[in-house]
Image 1 (cartoon, protein in one colour):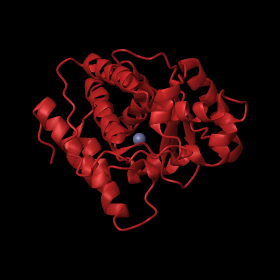
Image 2: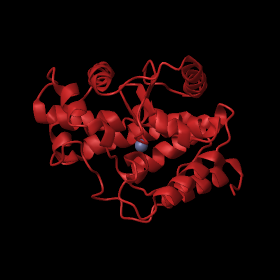
Image 3: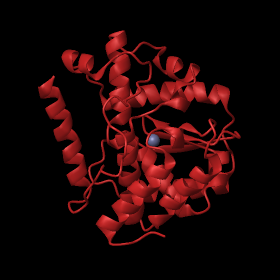
Image 4: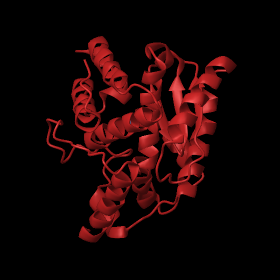
Length: 265
Ligand SMILES: [Zn+2]
């Protein structure tokens, strides 16, 4: 188990240092104890078990599951056909993708789901944005930060870790894996642990900043989300998942201050 954790650590460390050699990531901003906050897709299968069996998931498998999930998504949602909107999103996404230092090899695609649900999520290099989420974002900088965050889940191996859990439970991926994830609505509600989320926020904002977007806008987005949903149970998963939006705002501000000598308002 130690060996696998070590390898995972090296894997993460390599990505962290490859991204931009002088960027540092601090998780001191997270208040809660990080241990035990991992929520797996299907629960009950602990990372220790994964380590014992050493199940690995290839990027091809990750992409394949993404394709299956996409088929399920298309049955449930209408995809936006607004070409102007799609051109804009693709332009932003391509700028962000071009800043990834050591890409794992995804052919990133972005889709807009026509729904009043406020959400964004990703799997296998496919990024899903909802029309409601687009309305909520007040600038290209905010859109860039969200896209960067979702790319982080792919590049940092968070999705891969979740798929390893499923694969160890099933032995191999059956045809129904995608259906299982999408059909159960799980893909909309995947929760990563708070360290994953904070890491993706920072990773995403680094990509946004190197692509020329304003990083402080991302902190503003979490702030507005916090105001909007404070005290409510209906906060979308993207924001509700640990750490909560107020923590995420302060984590990002700290990250930007430390690495870019910029104090966000
Ligand atoms: Zn996330």
